[in-house]
Image 1 (cartoon, rainbow over the protein chains, first blue to last red):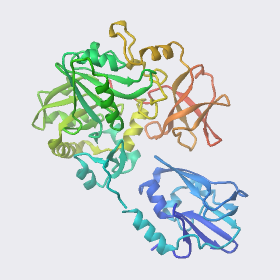
Image 2 (image 1 turned 135 degrees about the horizontal axis):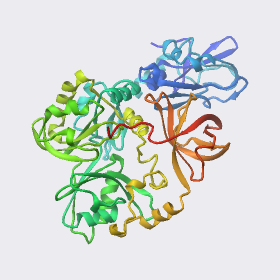
Image 3 (image 1 turned 90 degrees about the vertical axis):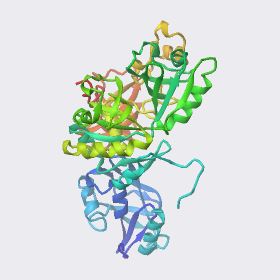
Length: 132
Length: 373
């Protein structure tokens, strides 16, 4: 079971409330799908500058593997308050620790309500349904 | 949820072999194909250093027979089919009257037949085009895509791996873009060509459908000590790009003509060829080209991708056709269309990714080739 202290999007981002912020990253499933289990397949991660206003569902960056580019989508609306720029030079952290050190941005949200997102159990069901 | 559909995705006779090898399978050109068995970049390195085994059964295989076959093919092909010696192969295209390609293909000049190998995604369109233009010619067109499977052994070790299984076929004497027939793994009359899509020494084998699993397994087991591994279409795309070879839908398609794509070696304006479909349009383009295909390399982190912009001396004037990480060059590479007037020796070039510019440089095509060694 994936961590139940956060919520999930259908595009495989996670969102976790930490104080006034919503921390955003991508799930192990997203990393696996992009890299096919080979961390060297990840080549680039484009993250925004702090201060960017994002809408829920809107693209805030891109992650690129050898053969594909995927959008990174904001789970909630608000302002990008902090960016984990260390990722850009250390993409391996996304494989090693997608739930912690692999966080991407912190959003100062318009609302801390995450009810529109899936909890861990629903996300697991969503992945299982997609696999068929 | 999977939905059954009349136009179901086709599976090659090697499908169960790919599944057993834990390949990642994707739909490509209407076929379920292995995109990779392991890391894509490792698969590229394998083919560059030893050898790789490919399932190419998705590609279209067509035989043209009849006394008018050469005249007929010279009407619909861009290359000069009558000039192809028996036992030789030439690159060609089918173009519409406007000079825009329907497909590109290899043309094998046989004794009493001409064999064509076309792209999977275009096979149905090609066959319809061929039948439409066969009227008035004494020809027959046979689609052998289902009856004959296709595999390739590519890389420096390919001849050493394959030769022990060949009878009546001396690979060392088979020149680049030549083909012959012989027994392979005891299967008589197999077509073997020294062709490929990798820029390496290599061979393509046309194997009766019922025998292809056996041939695959024998070669993979026998070649393993020399480093032979199965290779998916992901690596194949990088290998062909490094080798400067075009892919339909990228360097050529309904809006990108072969002359601008640098494929004039596959286009003949020889008077003896007579008139052919697309000739006058392509002659006009050749006389006053507006675009040219160039190679790009970039030390920046982003990989050039189809559709990215290309800026020359600051001005957005071109577009990326293909791109990839290149393990062989150790950098990211791509092909791009730029105005024919661009001076590659002097101009500054950048890739434009959603408005963000990344420094690049022009690079002669092909990036890599060892086919003629």
